[in-house]
Length: 252
Image (cartoon, rainbow, N blue to C red; front, side, top):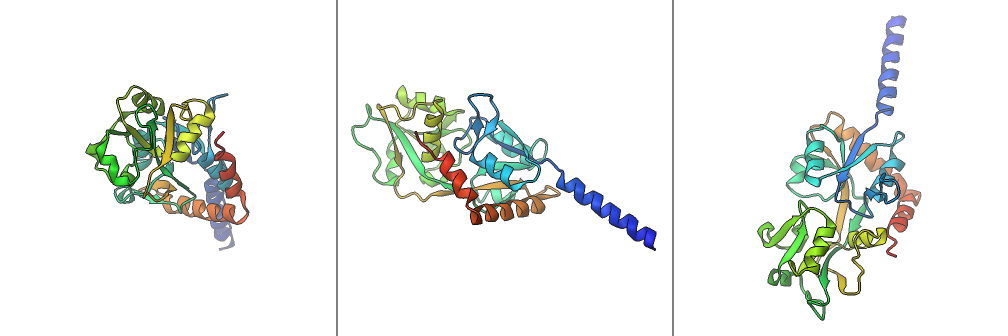
């Protein structure tokens, strides 16, 4: 009996050690989404606020990949190449496929426009968006605009393309998140702060909370989400989350 008990105890220890050493895989969109996740201009490593939050939570840091957003979602849902989606908005459709962590940050819906096209900010109320040709990134959540998907041109697969669409007059307005616009500008990859253009918060739009997500079919889904939730709470209590937010929200 003693020998059996020792054997079972050893198996439990081995299983626990194996789980503790698991390297989870996390992904984000390869169009990059500063300050949340992006390729470092120096060495092309994946960096950003969401990356640092996960590193601070897990004893063994996850591996990070940026790939087309739709592919990131699909591969996490199917568990083919990713376990965790970073920086994801929670929508009714997505809750059918994923378990979501508690929120760890929120973003400000905003719009970008050309001052050469508009002398003054063109949007005073959110419903005025319907008057203009509005563009967004392909695959991006746009429910905060109040527009239907068919009312938004979403062919652009990266933010430089969105910038060019405004520059060339193909779009009147680009909608996204204020922190992301400034994040690209801070990296020097897309000049959103150019004096010929402007970024404005979208009126009547609430801040959008961000989450991490795991496929509801993942065998360790609840375990991963519980670990992330506890980690976020700990980072909030010790002030580390605020420190990371302040670091990655620098605009200039």
